[in-house]
Length: 146
Image (cartoon, rainbow, N blue to C red):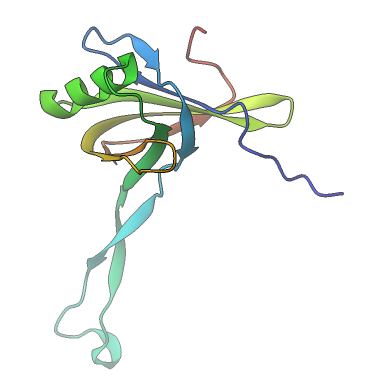
Protein backbone atom coordinates (compact mmCIF):
# COMPACT_ATOMS: atom_id res chain seq x y z
CA UNK A 1 0.00 0.00 0.00
CA UNK A 2 1.28 3.46 -0.90
CA UNK A 3 1.86 6.04 1.82
CA UNK A 4 1.20 9.01 -0.46
CA UNK A 5 -0.45 12.07 1.09
CA UNK A 6 -2.31 14.88 -0.61
CA UNK A 7 -1.78 18.48 0.42
CA UNK A 8 -5.35 19.07 1.61
CA UNK A 9 -5.27 20.69 5.05
CA UNK A 10 -1.89 22.39 4.60
CA UNK A 11 -1.53 25.91 5.94
CA UNK A 12 0.75 28.92 5.67
CA UNK A 13 1.30 31.72 8.19
CA UNK A 14 3.32 34.93 7.79
CA UNK A 15 4.09 37.43 10.55
CA UNK A 16 2.31 40.75 10.31
CA UNK A 17 3.77 44.16 11.25
CA UNK A 18 3.29 43.30 14.95
CA UNK A 19 5.11 39.95 14.50
CA UNK A 20 1.89 37.98 15.04
CA UNK A 21 1.61 34.96 12.76
CA UNK A 22 -1.35 35.45 10.46
CA UNK A 23 -2.79 32.64 8.35
CA UNK A 24 -2.79 33.29 4.62
CA UNK A 25 -6.25 32.74 3.13
CA UNK A 26 -7.14 30.67 0.07
CA UNK A 27 -3.72 29.04 -0.43
CA UNK A 28 -3.67 26.72 -3.46
CA UNK A 29 0.02 25.72 -3.64
CA UNK A 30 3.10 25.87 -1.44
CA UNK A 31 6.73 25.13 -2.24
CA UNK A 32 9.10 24.28 0.59
CA UNK A 33 12.67 25.50 1.05
CA UNK A 34 15.18 23.75 -1.21
CA UNK A 35 18.48 23.57 0.72
CA UNK A 36 21.57 23.55 -1.48
CA UNK A 37 25.06 23.34 -0.05
CA UNK A 38 27.42 25.76 -1.74
CA UNK A 39 30.78 24.46 -2.84
CA UNK A 40 33.89 26.46 -2.09
CA UNK A 41 36.84 26.23 -4.44
CA UNK A 42 39.88 24.87 -2.59
CA UNK A 43 42.20 24.31 -5.57
CA UNK A 44 45.87 25.20 -5.14
CA UNK A 45 49.01 25.14 -7.30
CA UNK A 46 49.68 21.50 -6.41
CA UNK A 47 46.16 20.08 -6.59
CA UNK A 48 46.40 16.45 -7.75
CA UNK A 49 45.90 15.94 -11.49
CA UNK A 50 45.42 19.69 -12.13
CA UNK A 51 41.81 19.15 -11.00
CA UNK A 52 39.66 21.56 -9.06
CA UNK A 53 39.07 20.65 -5.43
CA UNK A 54 36.15 21.79 -3.30
CA UNK A 55 35.13 21.93 0.33
CA UNK A 56 31.55 22.16 1.59
CA UNK A 57 30.30 25.70 2.05
CA UNK A 58 27.23 27.28 3.56
CA UNK A 59 23.71 26.04 2.98
CA UNK A 60 21.41 28.27 0.93
CA UNK A 61 17.71 27.50 1.46
CA UNK A 62 16.72 29.25 -1.77
CA UNK A 63 13.44 30.77 -2.77
CA UNK A 64 9.94 29.48 -2.19
CA UNK A 65 6.65 30.33 -3.82
CA UNK A 66 3.04 29.95 -2.86
CA UNK A 67 -0.11 30.47 -4.82
CA UNK A 68 -3.40 31.90 -3.62
CA UNK A 69 -6.84 32.66 -4.92
CA UNK A 70 -6.38 36.41 -5.24
CA UNK A 71 -9.00 38.57 -3.54
CA UNK A 72 -8.18 42.25 -4.05
CA UNK A 73 -8.33 44.28 -0.86
CA UNK A 74 -8.51 41.21 1.41
CA UNK A 75 -6.53 40.84 4.64
CA UNK A 76 -4.12 38.51 2.80
CA UNK A 77 -3.67 41.03 -0.03
CA UNK A 78 -2.91 43.75 2.52
CA UNK A 79 -0.50 41.59 4.54
CA UNK A 80 1.51 40.51 1.49
CA UNK A 81 1.62 44.05 0.10
CA UNK A 82 2.81 45.46 3.43
CA UNK A 83 5.46 42.74 3.75
CA UNK A 84 6.73 43.44 0.23
CA UNK A 85 6.79 47.21 0.68
CA UNK A 86 8.24 46.99 4.21
CA UNK A 87 11.37 45.28 2.93
CA UNK A 88 12.02 43.34 6.14
CA UNK A 89 12.25 39.62 6.78
CA UNK A 90 9.12 38.02 8.24
CA UNK A 91 8.65 34.79 10.18
CA UNK A 92 6.94 32.08 8.15
CA UNK A 93 5.35 28.79 9.20
CA UNK A 94 4.17 26.09 6.81
CA UNK A 95 2.14 23.10 8.01
CA UNK A 96 1.86 20.05 5.76
CA UNK A 97 -0.13 16.86 6.37
CA UNK A 98 1.98 13.92 7.56
CA UNK A 99 -0.36 11.05 8.28
CA UNK A 100 -2.55 11.78 11.28
CA UNK A 101 -0.38 14.78 12.25
CA UNK A 102 1.46 17.63 10.57
CA UNK A 103 5.06 18.59 9.90
CA UNK A 104 5.87 22.25 10.49
CA UNK A 105 8.55 24.24 8.67
CA UNK A 106 9.64 27.48 10.34
CA UNK A 107 11.88 30.07 8.74
CA UNK A 108 12.42 33.75 8.10
CA UNK A 109 11.82 35.08 4.59
CA UNK A 110 11.82 38.26 2.56
CA UNK A 111 8.85 38.82 0.23
CA UNK A 112 10.37 39.35 -3.23
CA UNK A 113 7.40 39.30 -5.56
CA UNK A 114 3.60 39.43 -5.64
CA UNK A 115 2.43 38.48 -9.14
CA UNK A 116 -1.31 38.75 -9.73
CA UNK A 117 -3.14 37.16 -12.66
CA UNK A 118 -6.64 38.27 -13.62
CA UNK A 119 -7.96 36.08 -16.47
CA UNK A 120 -11.18 36.75 -18.32
CA UNK A 121 -12.69 33.29 -17.77
CA UNK A 122 -11.08 31.76 -14.69
CA UNK A 123 -10.33 32.52 -11.05
CA UNK A 124 -8.04 35.37 -10.09
CA UNK A 125 -4.79 34.06 -8.62
CA UNK A 126 -1.50 35.37 -7.30
CA UNK A 127 1.95 33.88 -6.85
CA UNK A 128 4.11 35.15 -4.01
CA UNK A 129 7.89 34.63 -4.13
CA UNK A 130 9.93 34.66 -0.93
CA UNK A 131 13.68 34.44 -0.29
CA UNK A 132 14.43 32.19 2.67
CA UNK A 133 16.58 34.08 5.12
CA UNK A 134 18.70 31.75 7.30
CA UNK A 135 18.03 28.31 8.72
CA UNK A 136 14.85 26.23 8.39
CA UNK A 137 13.45 24.21 11.29
CA UNK A 138 11.27 21.16 10.65
CA UNK A 139 9.37 19.50 13.48
CA UNK A 140 6.09 17.91 14.52
CA UNK A 141 5.54 20.55 17.20
CA UNK A 142 2.84 23.07 16.32
CA UNK A 143 4.30 26.60 16.62
CA UNK A 144 1.01 28.24 15.61
CA UNK A 145 -2.00 28.84 17.80
CA UNK A 146 -4.99 28.15 15.58
